[in-house]
Image (spheres, rainbow, N blue to C red):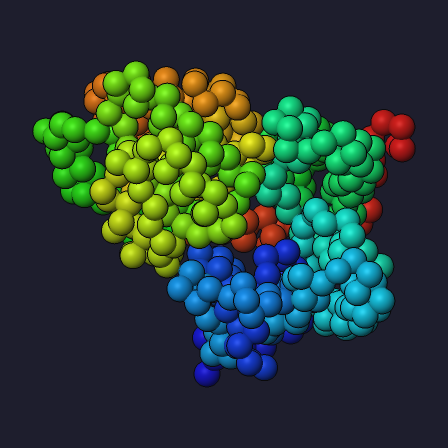
Length: 439
């Protein structure tokens, strides 16, 4: 029997994502390892409600496949893949070779769906999520709409950082951002349940509607949070040891993560005599540039690079060697590594973007520095380095927050919302009446 046997349940749970997957065979595929746990938990929660679980996702090219950071999903897991399009497809090829086929396949999947779980199309030239949302509305299927990131200030931030020139700034300011805004405005209103990551999004787009909720998307289980004994042992070690503050980053090495600013902050702190070290764990297109930056700044004794490790015990065991983790993205970001760090007793030092400020306000162990100032980040490093009582207090706070925000807790909370708003006797989603000018 397949895991999560559905008994007499009918209809599918259709999940559309923008995370690329690598197809291994007709019945198996590989996906980012942390997300694989999330998929299996989701499937188990609704096994008695739906007959099958289907994921629509872009298909990863062979040259990007990294088996050491991905997990395999096969037929026994009860999850079927419908490839949307190659993740490296050109805009022209998308519309001439894939769009019509994808529209047909999406509609065929949605015809059998009991629930459609989708999100915001951030890539407007290959708008897979928009196609799924439109097809769900057209067939009056219950839709759950999720947004992971508050995108509204990113254009301004990237222009300020000179990552974008005037052309990119104007294109995004005048086209991409308004279209994304309209997507959120209307999809919130045609969805049965909208989960928006951040109180600002809920306030501005939900306007008090009960089906619009704030949520955290965590990946770790209760078993992966430090136990009381493990936390006490970690605190005892912090109380008795001396030496440098050991910071860590783990995740993708891509430009918007701002790791060059973290290295600048280490350089500034080191020049002032602060004993601070940074380990960067991961792979990505920025690796060679970051290594070059470290070499040119003569920081090889202060900054170390390690390859990516699989999510779960290999990663969590490695994190035990560090005191705190860092996050310094150039634009709004919601990295799972932030709360993963707290689960292992690592407070987070981050720029004061909305996500990190929000976590700090609701009890997360996050200390923020002014974005995008490497000098202010260095000051935060230095303060945490010398204030061990504060580091210990933040360590305890981190674990307390993680215990209250495990994946099981948030999946159960989401399951209750899905039961309340999506699994009912209505034939499909009701267009929620907009307030204000469209009322």
